[in-house]
Length: 398
View 1 (tube, rainbow, N blue to C red):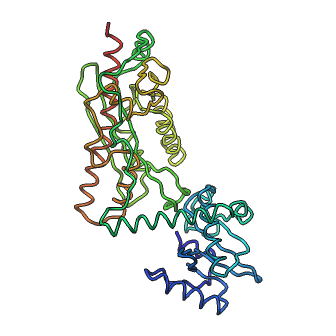
View 2: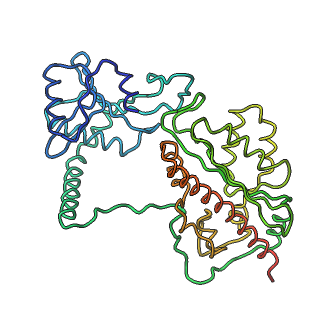
View 3: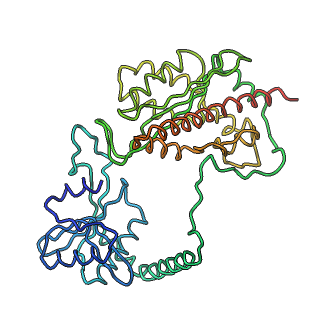
C-alpha cells in the first residue's frame, strides 16, 4: 500500500526503513539540509519518541505531512496519532504547516491497473489537531510509563501482556446449570410449520482486502470465499454436508457462486442465522454475475432466518439477555456443542486463515489450513441443525 501511495507523489527520496532509528533520523536531517522536496519515510526523534512520516512534502515553502492509514474514514485514534506525530516533529525542530490523512477512497472501483490518484483520498486535519494540544503531553507521559513497565517485565523474564483473541472459539460464560427457557409454543409451531423440506442450512465466510485486487472491486469489499451447507431431505433423515473453499489463485466470486447454486438446489427452505450478511453477499453476486440473477433471486426468496424465533421472542433465554448471536444461543440450547477445540474458532479467524492461505506456497500449510477452514464452516451449519432440532423439541414439550 505504501508503494502505491508514494506513486501519488512521484520523485521523492526514500529514507531506508531499517532497524536503526538513529540512521534513519540522520538520513532525514541530511535530506532536509539538501532541501529534498519529497521524502518518503522521514524519521524524527524527540524526547524518546520516534515519529515516521509516510510522505513529507515541501511546496512553496510550506511543509505537508501525510500519514497513510488503511481505512476509508477518519477515526478518532488517527487524529490523536497525528497530534502525537506533530508534537514530536515540533520538538525535533520542524513545524509542519498541514497534516493530511491519506485514506482509501470507498468510491474507487478498480478497472484495469490501479490508479493511486483515485485509490487514495486525502483529508487535511491540522485544524482538528489544535484542540488536542492539551492532551498530547499527558498521553506521551502515559506511553513512557507503559514502555518502562514493559522493559521491566522483560528484564524480569516476564512475557509482555498480549490481548487474548476473541470470537466464537472462546467459551461464552453462561450461568451454571440448565438455563430457563420461555417458549411461546403456538407461535413456535407456526414458525416451524412454515419450513419446507428439503431443508438447507447455509453459512458464508468472506474476507476483505484493503487494496482491490480484481476489476470491479473496491477497498475493503467483502468477498465470499467459502460456504457450508447441510441438507436434510425429509423429516428424520440424516443431514448431508457440503463445504467449499474457493481457489486462491483467481477472483473467488465466480467459483463460489457456481458451487453454491448447485449445493442449494431449486426448492426447499434455506435457513441462515442472521440473514443480513448472506443476503448482502447474494445481492452482490447478482451484480457481479448477471447470468445468475434469476437463480439468486429465487434462492433469496427461500431464505428463512433461524434467529427469528429468538429475536421475536418465540423462545426467550433470560440467562443470555439480548445476546442472540450463535455463540450465545448454541451453548444455551445445545450445551454439548462448542467451537473451543477448533483450530479456527471465529469468522475473524477464518478471514485471517484464508488470507494466510492465499499468501502461502507451503503445500503442508495449505492442506492443513484448508482442512481447518472446512471444519470451522461445517460446525457453523451443524450448529444450526442442532438448534432447529431443539426448537422442534421445545414446540412439543408439555
